[in-house]
Image 1: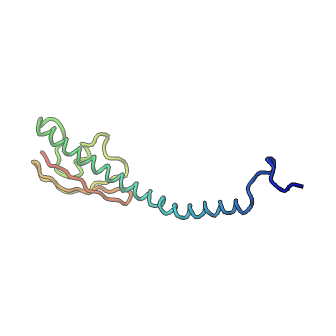
Image 2 (image 1 turned 90 degrees about the horizontal axis):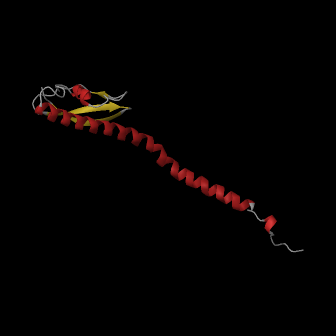
Image 3 (image 1 turned 90 degrees about the vertical axis):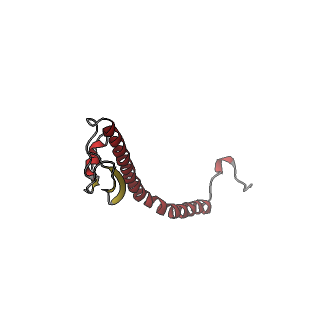
Length: 126
């Protein structure tokens, strides 16, 4: 009787299947720590993105108000910049109050959300 495999009996041996499972386990153990930090990085990037939007909104507001004093918003505090942001400040984000001197004085302000902080620049204008 011929002991070679026929087409109907083809398949994987138990040892081959165990080796594949072991390899997949090792790959999962190596890759898992990289995915755990993705959440933390995403929160940091989100706060930095909103801080960048606030800096841009402040600069655009300053230029608009300088060109025509009836347009834009007066900025005397870091928290005033949120009114210049289209759509307003997202829920859960907090701007630390700090005075901003008028007439093109730039002040570093702090934005906080999800335990992460980022700085943005506010340009004062009356």
